[in-house]
Amino acid sequence: MIKQKGAEDMEKTEKDINQQLGTSEVVWRLEDLFASPDDAAIRKIMDHSLESARRLREEYAGRVADLSASELKAVVESLENLSEELAKIGAFAYLNFSTNAEDPEAGAFLQKVREFGSQVEKELVFFELEWAKVEDERAEQLLDQPVLAHFRHYLTAMRRYRPHLLSEIEERLLIELSPVGRSSWVNLFDKVLAFHRYGERKRTQEEVLTDLYNPDRQIRKKAASELTEGLRKDLHIVTHTFNTVLADKMIQDRLRSYPKWISSMNLANELDDETVDTLIHSVTSNYATVERYYSLKRDILGMDQLYDYDRYAPLPWLPDRKVEWKQAREMVIDAYSRFSPEMAAIAERFFMDSWIHAPVVPGKVSGAFAHPVAPSVHPYVLLNYTGTLRDVETLAHELGHGVHQVLAARQGLFNSDTPLTLAETASVFGEMLVFQDILATLNDPRERLGFLCSKIESIFATVFRQIAMNRFEDAIHNRRREQGELSSEEFSVFWMNTQREMFGESVTLTDDYGIWWSYISHFLHVPGYVYAYAFGELLVLSLYATYQEEGDDFVKNYMELLASGGSRTPYELMKPFGIDLRDENFWLQGLHIIDKMVQDAQTLYEQEVIGR
Image 1 (tube, rainbow, N blue to C red):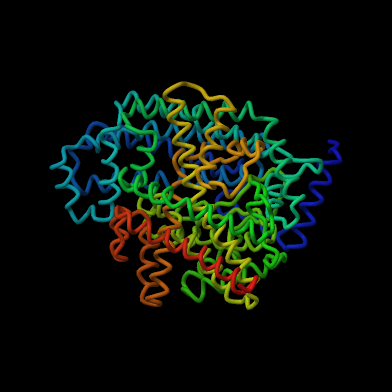
Image 2 (cartoon, helix red, strand yellow):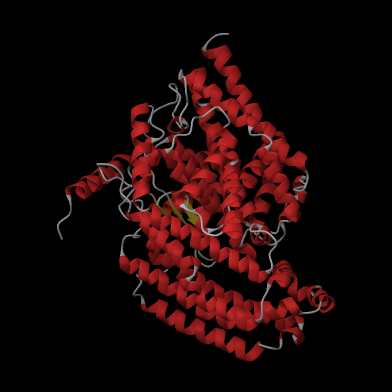
């Protein structure tokens, strides 16, 4: 096979970056799961899982309401063991695909596993339906039995879907169709973006996005242009994919009688609509903080106008260095160790035991994630490490997820599944620990200002930007339900409107920026997910402030929180910290901390830099 020159140059560039940073060999060992997609163990587990699912159905279907507490426990344990085996296969298929998204065989294997999962789920759906229909008095009698103490929250939480469940025939049909439904379109979206190459050098999306943080304005402008040009090539496909996913959710919500497009996500997060509405209102009512900061940044950079491609421009005094992988590892472990030796020891295992995939390589999905896999194995972390200080913080962020997942795994599969709103707790906290460590080493006030501003922007991306994206989602879901399919132009109008509401007059958004909604995978992977980032960031800002006041006394409660996983509701898990998630003042507390950071940056600039 003859490669085009552009592809060869791109691979050489990526190889050079990986060698310089020391990430070439930082690849995960998926053999902890399976040797390859052809591993005979996969077929064996699949056959056994389907057989076990059918046996459970034959033995217990129609009898759930009559089971004793001990029998109910036995069924749940069987379901958990079965789910654990399927989780390992599903994780392996996705992890294999995530570094080989251009490989048809990897994509086909992932689809095969998803289709098989629906076969098994179809056999087991009887349990959730029958358990939800058990009379409340009878259910409480069972759940009060000590033998069910470990699964009490899991079984209680399952019943919250009672008003939204369909008949067994309908549920089985939806499960049967699911592999060719939304997940298939999401898979297409991932493949399209993985194949995208940008600009004359045919670079990956990750490399182009990294250029938006370059101090040279022309490089940033060119990167923005290349990203837009690349996205525009397949915009018709992405637009159709978005419309299909929106329609799929519309139909699902209608069938299940969810009143709002976001209701199912709120229910999954074990939150009431009031809590989420309070969070969103608190953030949007404080958009002035964003406008004030970017106006400050415009002054610092000496620009008449700040364009969208200037948002991430580093300040001239920000330390501009490449951090090799070995040093990044030390920075994160040291920060974790000072907070909790246990946290550091768990994080160290990710490096020692090859649980991380770090290099930038062709066919790898963009971004970063931590995958929990299953309690009997261990999580994996994916990065696209390019050596920036931002990447070091991303490493700390994803390892925070990993530590959380390891600790929560002790609860077992069903209780380790943390609601999305709390899933960011350890990741954002770990990121904050590393930020504070780096900040403490900077004695030059200009460097401190540069690094403080970079953190402010990171927090903005997690809080204000995510809520602005939630407002975009709200607009497109409601528009799809009220008037039908949206054109690419209509998506762009909603995108620009919701972004302008956040930036105000501080950032000039170019026409090119109008299609940047089209590469954000969260809108398709998990509709409604993005507000969880803001939830997690504001929660962590409050928790970190408590840590600064209480010191070591805080650590014990915090580690217990992580180890609790999803064994209690978010409201219950926050009680030891005196936090009421329904109270607007709680959310405003976190927003005031952000506002104070902006004030500190303003003061530092005026007093230490320009000498007012």
